[in-house]
Length: 395
Image (cartoon, rainbow, N blue to C red):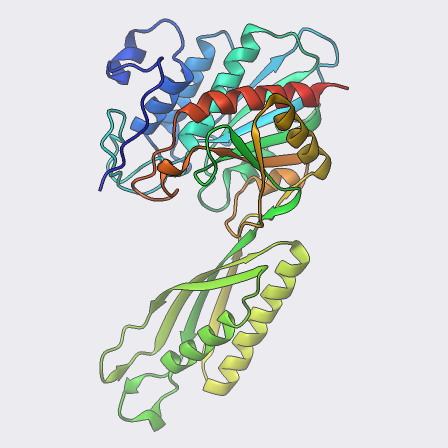
């Protein structure tokens, strides 16, 4: 079943975007920018064409770009007034997901099995639009840094690679700002939460080694299937409102009357703080040891740390809320969210704010083949992000 998109904005075009950008001397509009990225999506850390296109469009308005984290793009715009070391970083992610698109629109994905199903194309279009406006009028004090970041969708997270290069050295970074599309909010409404917001995530992998054999001769077995079943039950008992653990993959290559020698499990752990993370990881290791003692098995437990918790600076959050209300946008307070975002890395080094941009309920759910955000949110997102950046640059 396909999703019918909302009517295209007035700056849309039916001309194939590939031809449009080949012949156009002027930079494309933010909507055209978004549609180009949507047509040619690339997965995490493979965003070569995406980065080249972003560079092309920014250079067309006279901006100097440089690569960061290999397939990311960084650009800075200095204001006309003093204190250029004072900076605000605006971040957009640019990678796509391994999903086959099921939406019948002229700008649907041309890359089989890859789709911008999480709105990263729209995030990038908003940032691009802000940079166009700031280039046209630099009547502000400080520097706005635009960061088109690769690899948000998988470990180690592009944000960690960006920070490893220390690209903001020498600047007084007042804030790192990011946004994410939100289909539960209407266009024109923004979502905020001060303090901890999105979960830290760990990837869990367990290999249980036992002694398999005939399923009817249980006295000869050290059954890794039974051990895995009990371990899963014990792990799931750790779940609370702020500690979420799920096992999503189980491999046991046996048969109706064959118990295998080993069982493999994969899952995820989500918590909302580093102390809680450490405690949960230690509890998992304890459960594994106790389970092995009961079943005479040996378990390899691999806990691969992912992104830290997204923590929004309370003062930044309040300034953003006040600004949104003053301009006339809708404002919603957000609950804790158990999904993860590598934007959390920025908050470990700089004051940071990550908010939600309403794209309308007709957009459908993110990370699905039918996701189709309302493009009217692009201009709303541009206006607010620009106003917020300039507001935060004020002394």
